[in-house]
Image (cartoon, rainbow over all chains, first blue to last red; front, side, top):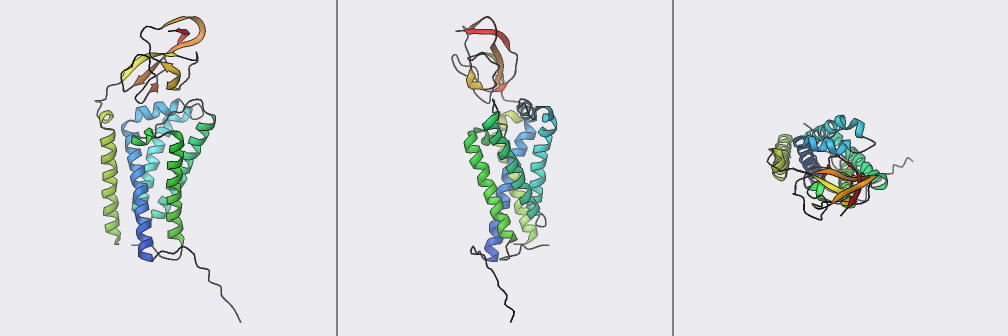
Length: 157
Length: 102
């Protein structure tokens, strides 16, 4: 006799609730990225100057100063389109991970710590900033876990 | 939730994010923010990019040496006697050789 083992996730949310949680997380992530991208675009000169003072990336500062906010806008657009929200979540988690690695490396090795993160986020200390980023990575990963689980399917157009 | 509702809500939140960002950056957005370029004395004699290593001193001077005496910082808050650069300080270089003499 053939036996089929069905493993069920211990963490269970109803389809509707799960879908809503993922959608709210997408909105929060999109809000964060659009908020910071706008301030980087509007005060671009300052952002560029800040990056150019960092020895490792200083020579690419002009490219990075456009690439970083553009990537944030792109990920935000992916997050609000139901067909691409998952790609957006991967992009969000990936970008924030890169930012976090950059901050940790700066804290460990750099003599100067220029923060040009945009808006009120610049008021955070570096350690607070790391925790802030880790929290956002965690909620993005949680949203991906929920949407990848078989508990519910996000409605597709 | 229907997809068009999701997109509409997403656009609304996006507009809020930009509006909120514009609000918190209002002064810089339209060039109304006053920026101060001032020379600050280096406390450790290096061209450090850390604002805490500098001090504003109207009565300070530099004695001749190969160290770094002062550097120019751009700030959004006017320089205060005896304080480090404050208010989004940006290192503007403009270093001068010498040793800081209070």
